[in-house]
Image (cartoon, rainbow, N blue to C red):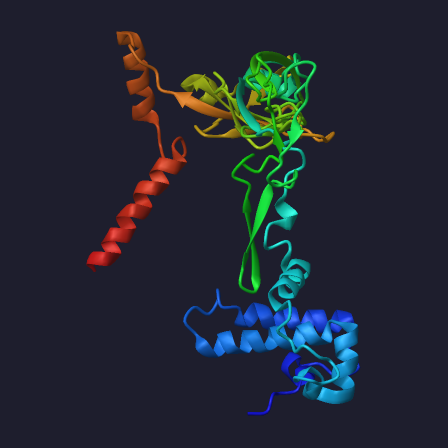
Length: 376
C-alpha cells in the first residue's frame, strides 16, 4: 500500500514554515495521542503516521531529500539511506521534549529545592467604633520563620547543599519508553534537586523554625465585616531559603449595643413615651463620631417612624463619603399604671374618635367592608 504524502498527513502546504509545521503536528498529535484514545487502533496508527511525517519534515536535510525524491529518498539504497528507523526512538524523544516539554514536567522543575511558603490566615475581631475610626492593631502570629543558624539553606554552618547526582539538580529523572521520554520526580532528592549531607541542627534541614511574631496591622476607617487585609511576605517562610507566603487578616465586627449597620448607614431604635409621641417633643442621641444630635418628634408620631441624620453614619472605605444615621422611634406602651392613670386613660378612650385614631379606625372599617363584600 502506497504511503500518504507527508504534507497531506500534517495538513500543510509544501511551502509551510517550521512554525506552521510544528503547530500542525502539535494540534493533530494532541488529538490522536494514545493516552486520549485508549484502545483505538485507528488513532494509534494515525499518531504513528503523524510522527513519521513530522520527523522527516522537521529535519531540513530529510525534508530537502523528500521534496526531491519523495518516499523513495528513504527506501533501502535510496539517496536518504538508512531509512527512517535509525535512531527513531531517540529523535522522537527530542521532538516531544521540544513540543510537549511543559506537559512532561520540564516547566515544573524546582530551582535548588526552594519552595514558597504557605499563605496564612488570621481572624481579627474589632468593635464597630474601631471600624468607624480605624486603628493600628498588634497581633501575634505563630508561624515558621527563616532559620538564622543556616540562613534558610538547611545545611549546617560551614557546609552547603550538594547537587543531586541522580537528576543533576533538575529534580526530575527521565525514562525512555518506546517513542516517549517519561519524566518523574527524582526518587533520591524527592524533586528538590539538592542533597544535604550535614543538615542544620537548629531546623533539622528544613531551613525554617517555628516562632511567634508580633506584627502591626493598619485597619483603615470604614472596613466592613469580612474585609481581608493582605500582608505580603508575612506568611510561612519558604523551605530552604524559598520566598515567604502572605498573611491574610480577616476582620469580623462585634455587634454594637445600640447601632446596627447596613453598608455605610447606621440604624438605631429609640423608645419614646406614648405622651411624647402624641404631643411631640425631642430627644438627644449620640453618634459614633462622638457628637450629639437633637431629634425633634412631631405631634402624632407613630411607632416605626424614622428620622434621618445626614453624615452621621460610617465612613466609606478609601473614600471621603460618609453614610447616614437613621433613628427609628418606637412608641412604648405604659406599664404598672396607678389607679388615677387608668382613670385618665379610660376617660381619654371614651372621648376618642376616628379622628384621634385614624389608622386603627380606618383599618377595621376596611376589613369589615372587605368581608361584607365576600359574603354578599
